[in-house]
Length: 297
Length: 118
Figure 1 (cartoon, rainbow over the protein chains, first blue to last red):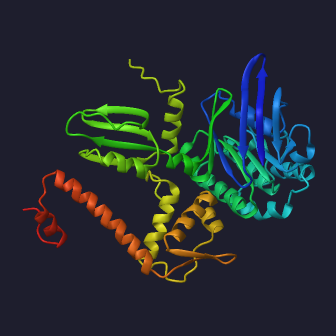
Figure 2: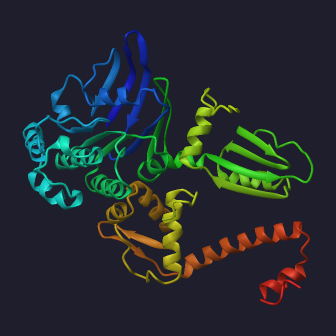
Figure 3: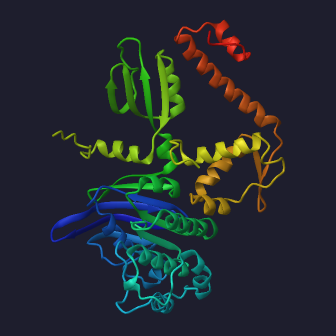
């Protein structure tokens, strides 16, 4: 569905995207995460056809996004800062998008109204930041797009509204196979809604996996031995911290298999805990100079 | 769903349904909620729910009928699987207790519901 090959983009000689590859399948909810300044927003603007790449390919359904207007009619994008005309009401923006997108459904716009509790007669600029975001989602979902691009979408939304919006979006995913790409720092939330995750670091995609693959392949183990002893050979250790006799290990591998192997070494206790996406993010990036630095004052 | 639970979401969904089925809250032949309904009501990814359903099906708790949805199966085989699982947990607890110097008699007494802390 979305395919990016060897994407390069620099601004004033500063390379922001540095040979990036990305693959998003149809009907996937793809979470894009990465440290500040990794290039997330720049990548999304390429996918929306706003930026033209220096080199590489940006394709949606095999067509180049920047050059092909027919692709753009199927893509809807909510940027980190909402755009609207200065004197426009929500209703005016609805008319603007209705004329822009052939797939816009006024009927759906009306049907979605109770979900948002916004007065369409109000000026966009008089709405709060969170309400503007709500209005943007209202319009986006009325477009009935095939591809939804969201840049930090839930910023400024209250928890109830976040849930409301995800509930609506995920219904579309289940029903119509809508493809969603979402960048966020809220990993807890991504964990619920995404099935694929890509970690962006310094303009490159560090890793791209299905969430279940990520969660099944990296585990946190706590164990303790009565006396000091070596761990079995051939463990793929990502992180180790000792506090007294208790070892905390972050290992690559399946929980079941590691549990068996380590149980055979007769530890005093052994506890295998799955990792949260937040922890995976930290340990995966930990190897690439992004460790949380211990600065003590 | 429990946001403080560190287990992956599909496991939480699976476990939740398993409880409902084993306790009879979801009766045999009852229709399971559709993937779309669940995705909307829990605000979680439909593929996650599908994975939970697939595993529940593989373990014999539910069966899916193409085009009609998933239904709760009769409980004879899942009960056996659950039994094996619980026994394994019991074995793990036993191992830890042994390390702590608990005698087998003591453990048996506890299992029978007798006084354990004397």
